[in-house]
Amino acid sequence: MLSNQYVETFQPHQYAFTCKCSMCENEHVITVDAPELFRYNRGAHMQDAFPHLTPDERELLISGICGSCYDNLFGDPSE
Ligand SMILES: [Zn+2]
Image (tube, rainbow, N blue to C red):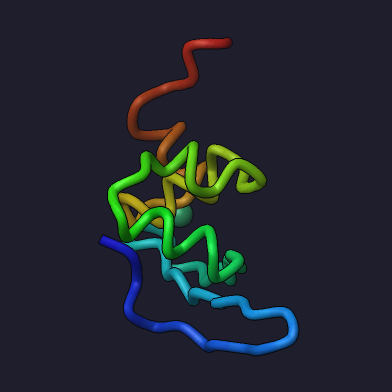
């Protein structure tokens, strides 16, 4: 579920979600375009709906945990 804390702006139509990491409590603002959010709400996968977001940003939107905390929790398989 996406954060319900967001600011909607127009021209361009975007939503800026304020996501607070539930572990380190750092706040991140993640901006998505309205058509992308619409796609997501219609059931598109996160990576298809928001292709320009980094994996860390998508993780924060999905799980409420930022990229560095996620890596600390589960390890980074690339290392
Ligand atoms: Zn964190």
